[in-house]
Image (cartoon, rainbow, N blue to C red; front, side, top):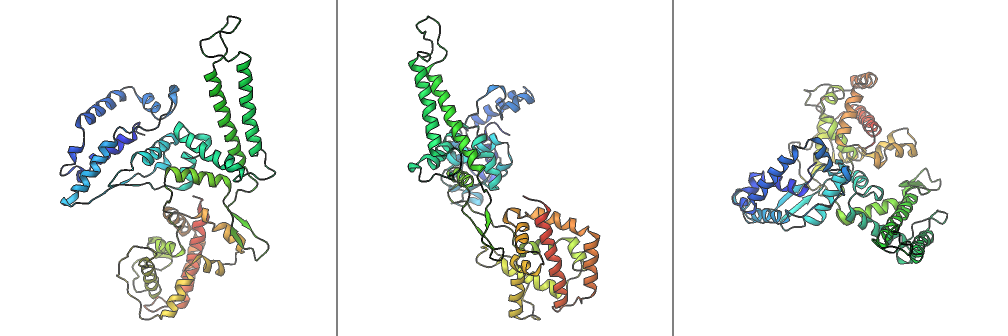
Length: 451
């Protein structure tokens, strides 16, 4: 909630001794830091109302884009760290992680995104901006709720190019949609012609001037142009609304009756626009983190005490052959090149299971294999397991703990476990029981809530 996000970043960096030592303090103008601190203390005496007004439009304040007053300081701090970083090493870059921007108020989020995009493209300074795409698009890139003028005008230009540019060849409107390209152009032309007529009639002759009757004019030509600017923006906003309310805004559509198969369709225009806005301000090539896989969820829940107690029978049980096999598979999935990170190597391949069976188990720990095991219709299964319902780690834990409080589920698992043998060898029956439990946990995690 800082009114000056750039100074907030500088203050965060200079509070880190690894940045300031050994001579990063030379990059900091001490007088500015002291003056800023005193100014903030004096302003805080005004109470909560003053603080609120710094992050809203209360009191008629016009929201402004973030300043770049501290850019030189940031650049010098990055240079000092590069020349002599922690431990006296050279070549260390500052990596600044600006988290939770997509959880801020819209104006705050817009300020930070604008600042990070245009103000921190500095040598030896890397910016990491973690965000949930839908959250950030709603807070920052919604044309109907933009507070910063420069951000709004850039988005307007991108939208106008998509709707009106290239002779309308990229027109996103369906043939039956209201407000086609021609309608927008004709409306803008009519608005401008109406203003020209007012000017010719002598109603708009300029501020401070009088007409032939000696009375002051009802408005200036500059005001008229501003009015037309607002009407032009409003017409584009209306076109955006029509695009959002298109005939079909879903990501997936059912194909012809081919066993209920569904394939990805071209993104709707509103999503295309939001992605275009996002790419211009955040990054042209964001790093997309994939949703949790079936095996990821298994890895998470296997470490929960409630699952150890109910599913594996005992928290202290360490010689479970099925558990040892699953732990080995999880570890091997971490060290594969596609994951690009290494796990510990404390689990070795069990000598009681063949490579063929091991590969078959890996194939069974997937969403596709789960779909085949369940009796749910493919279309209903996809509706529940849709990508936009993908749970986070916290949701998986919460959903699992909630399921472990279900007496019916716990009792069923306990009864099935009684029919199996806990041994150091791999027991197929016990594995089938655990797999059934994992299937229910995964389904519960996906239906627990939508994130």
